[in-house]
Image (cartoon, rainbow, N blue to C red; front, side, top):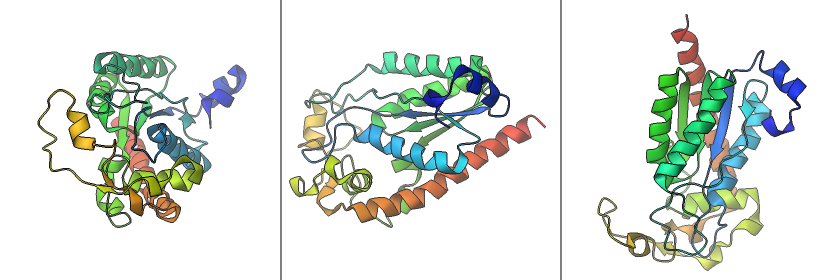
Length: 241
């Protein structure tokens, strides 16, 4: 169920039986010339829509965090970069408030790579408060399965672009992109390194993206996400019994 839809009375009733909250987290940034600036927000939002149909009676879907940290893409127009320090503290404060509201489990559903270091810290701090925390980075966690559907993954690549097309084909135009690869070692950082790594603001074979591939990815990953959430509940149950 969507938290924003609940009245205070309904929220109090729901809290008697629901102790899991899902927080979608994204980013507004450049995704090549072909993909929506909101790609990293749209994809978690779509997962939430699908998850709500299946487990909406057991999970409160919180309003999303739309801005994150993107040092690598910050040189590109359209990227709204929040410092790692500010972003980490902000998400932690949100999680801490859900803990104060009585939630024992929180799912950090992340759509953006630059958020990962911060969310690792957030997860550890929330766990120290006593929460059970599941962090999902879909393109990392399910990479092996993704490669069975899209062979050219990457930032704004075939996988992300396909997922966006499956939401609304008006949000992306793969004809504006091709197949951009880079031999730059991502472990080496230097000023404006993102301009060298991403060139036109993306990586991968975005030109091969289709809505049909995106739908296959959603259906496949939805089962994997549900399995991870069930693991969270199993660990939470075992830890209190």
